[in-house]
Amino acid sequence: MKHIFLTLVLFSLTGITSIAQSTFQIEGEEVFKNEDVVFHKLDDHTWVGSGNGRTRESLYLVEGNEKSVLIDAGTNIRDLDKFVASISGKPVMLIATHVHPDHTGPSIDKFPVIYINAGDTVLIPGIMPNYKGEVRFLKDGERIDLGGRNLEVVFTPGHTPGSTTFIDPKAGYGFSGDSFGGGYLLLGVDFSTLITSCEKAVALMDKYRINFLYNGHFNGINQETRQRLTDMVTLSKEVLSGKRTGTDNPSGRMGLNMIVNDFGVRILYSAKSLK
Image (tube, rainbow, N blue to C red; front, side):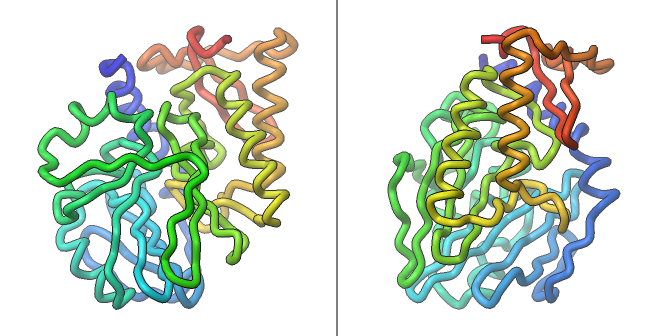
């Protein structure tokens, strides 16, 4: 299992590259830039960092009245802890949408604690083997209180078994990492699990009037919308029922030898996902 997901990681680093770089156009005010990352303002208390590596991985700094959270830490961003603290001016805790090297790379070493979904524990030895800090586990449905601002933890396995979404009901948006792929999903679980995650996210978007979810490779225009998640459910159900047959994926890495493509959504999957 560990070998399969490590291979998926390598595939994701190549598969997302062309999409993320060719359409990258974040328009918010630039508040920080160095060789490794550039941060733009999304609103007065929220910022997105875009890694300058080949995957354009996204980091989100979310500020409350008392503290801030950094959602994902990118690949290898030097002094990340120092400049996110200077941007927010508040103590910063690190949480992760999933355990992959472009989201929990060596940059995590500067943080004494990281919070993850226990579903991705199997990936820790191969992806963050040198982390000396404490790994703590999130709980599905818990609220992270930042002081005047709360993030709800929502387990949404899709890209990995431990993929997690963080919803901000007050702001009207959330952060989903690679759970749903941003239009290009490398499916690390089965379609039935993906359907459950999409329907769960849609229900919460309706409940809290969430407009969209920022994803793990945000390029300025590829937010996860309710419609996209609904389309993914439709695609998944059609694949499982046999109504729709995927086409061959030429690369076929890690066994993701099939691809289904419609509604502006691509899902790469394997025979193991057909349950």
